[in-house]
Image 1 (cartoon, rainbow, N blue to C red):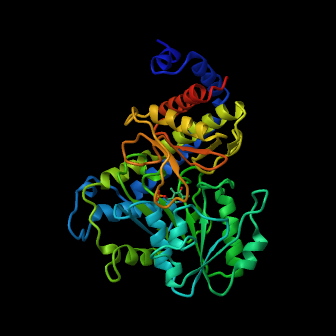
Image 2: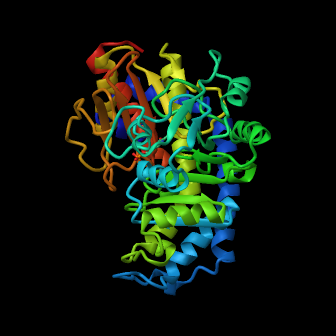
Image 3: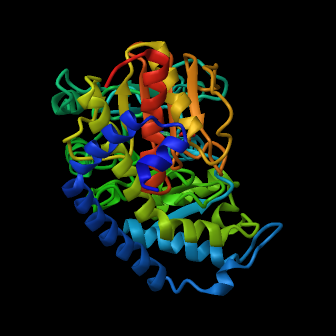
Length: 426
Ligand SMILES: *Cc1c(COP(=O)(O)O)cnc(C)c1O
């Protein structure tokens, strides 16, 4: 049986399957370049593990206070090596990316300080942390003000605006690498470096923090290698490699990471407490897999972009563009199109393939959101998943794929559902 026949047995028409393989044939060179990136990043991760003498004893579970958790210290050492930073905080007690960002901001800002976003409005869940939308416990309630400089019409960085926005009160700049749910382009690591130089040229002591969600291992360098003082992300995205069951990380300069530890646990306790409950092996093995998982996700994103672009849908980034994160946005034009796309991703999943996702109000988001995620780790978006807010232009944000075969099949299934539910012809 050839693959097209197997696809047919799994609900994908011959027409869709053949269209997919034509698209795939056109991507051989792109995919080869991604394999080279994955190899380089794999060696970086391996070296970080060897340099920190990762050993079997580190996988022993700890409980209670978790004093002297050697595995936790090794894992944090590995992250610090990988990002070339002084220190790292990598913990299962950090519940998600939003939590990690909240820790990094609230740990390093004090009443009277100003927070600057130099690249437009940050990710939706940041609204309530900052107080862009009034919220109990926001930074605004603690007297931290917020200022934002939008990117220019053409998607470039407003350096002049950034310089003008820095005041003596500017304490921290939050730079979001990935576009999130916005339609601006994702920043490259080089661009992040330029923004940081610009900010530091006006006020050298501004803490430059990067929300690194979805960007890890997509390039050969990370933002901490171009001047970022702090870098923050989630372990159920890129760096968990699909194996991490929970967690977040914060890497950077020792004094800022230390502030984060005091905020996460308690003043006085800091990094000294925090049992790992036996998941250190999953967090390290996940990191070990991460370069190849990220490569699969990138291939899936490029495949999806090519497939939908050829059918006349607007896609961000465009099929031919260089990638700076694993997210692919496809404007599905109608609510039905967005839902059909998500139905296909869900139907292709290894877990919960039989359920049909529906739009719903989600905490932290200001419009209904539809989410497709048939994942082993609940909500893990390094696994094949798609989501999108139900507002024009009905963009499906698609990401992940633990391996390429599954990413490809999921995208094929999304197209199958779009063909069936929206009656388009190929
Ligand atoms: C995912 C993400 C976050 C954090 O989201 P969580 O769901 O809380 O992990 C923050 N910023 C960006 C850009 C993201 O993609």
